Length: 376
Ligand SMILES: Nc1ncnc2c1ncn2[C@@H]1O[C@H](COP(=O)(O)OP(=O)(O)OP(=O)(O)O)[C@@H](O)[C@H]1O
Ligand SMILES: [Mg+2]
Image 1: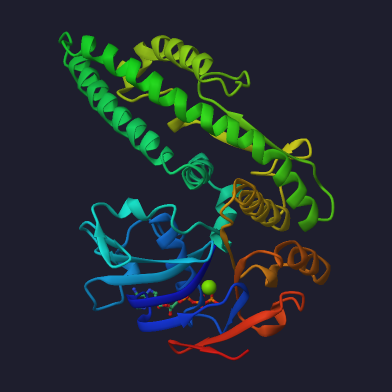
Image 2 (image 1 turned 30 degrees about the vertical axis):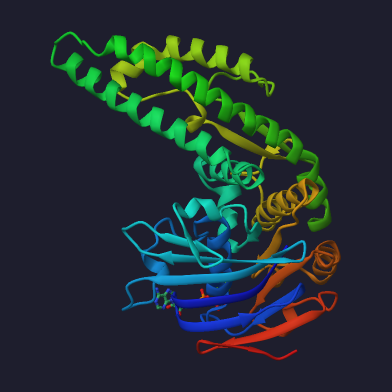
C-alpha cells in the first residue's frame, strides 16, 4: 500500500499543507526544526492512532488552534480510500472514511499500515520494560487489529483488580476484615484468561521476530551479534512456550501464590503488565552493556524486522525512516538502502541531501519554513 496524498490542517507547525506522494522512495530534506518529522508523524498517527513522540494529543495541535486534521488518500491494490482524523485533545477524536463518519476512530486501524523508525526508538533498547511491551503490543495490533481489544480487556481487568486490592490493603491496615476477597477470585480468573491470551501472543511474536531481527542487525552492524530475544514472564524464570492453556494455568497458579503479597501491597504483581523482552547481544543484555551505536542498530533492527514480518503477512506497510542515515557510515548506509529500496513506499527524512544514499532514488521534497516543495 502507499499514501498518495497527505493533507494536514493545524497539525504541529503546519497551518495547512498538501503533499502529493508517489509510491517508491520519497525523501524530505531540510534544516533542523522545519517540520520534516511532523509530516511523517502525521502519517504514523493515522496508522496507529498514536504519536511516536508524545503520549497525549495536545502537542499535535498547532499552537493557538483547537483541533488538528490529518487526511490521507491510501492506495491498496489499486483502490483509493480516503481516511480522515480530527484530533481533539482532551475529547474524543473523530474519523471519517471516504467522507462518511465512522462510529469509532479505531475503525480506521488497518486501512494504513506503517513501520516508523525514529531516534526515539533508542528507548526500545535502553528504556524501561514498558517500551518493549508497547513495541510488541503495537506490532500485535498491526498484524491483527482485534488484539487491540485483547489488550484493552486485560487493562480493564487489571485496573478493576488493582482497585479491589487497594481497598483490601487499606482495610487490612485499618485492622478490619475484608469483604471484597470473594470478588477478587472472580477477577483472578478474568486476569488469568485475558493475561494468558496476551502473553501467548507476545511470546509467539518474539519467536517469529527473532531470526528477522538477527538478519537485520547483521546488515546494520559490523559483528557483535548474534542477537537474541528472550521473553521474560513475571510468572517465573522458566521460558514459556506460546501455549495459551499452559500459560493460563501457570498464571492462575502464580496469582494464587502472590495473593498475600498483593493484598499487602495493593497491586497486581504477576501478569503481562510486568513482563519484559530481554534483548541480548552476544552473551550480554543490550541494555546496560551495548554501545550507543550497537543500541541504535538494535533498535533499527527491531523496526526492520517488524517491517519484514508485516510484509510477509501481505498488505505491505509504508516504511518511514526518520533521521536514520546520518547515524550510519557509508557502507552501512548502502546496505540499508539496498534492503529497503524495493519497498512499495519508503519515506525518509534527512537534514541534508548528502545523507540520503544514492541507491534511494526517487522523489525529493525540501521542507523549510512550513513549506513542503517537491524538487525532484
Ligand atoms: N503544536 C505545535 N504548534 C506549533 N509548532 C509546533 C508544534 N509542535 C511542534 N512545533 C514546531 O515544529 C518544529 C519541529 O518540527 P520537526 O520535529 O518536524 O522538525 P524536523 O524538520 O524534523 O527537525 P530535525 O531535523 O531537527 O529533526 C519545531 O520548530 C516546533 O517548535
Ligand atoms: Mg526530525
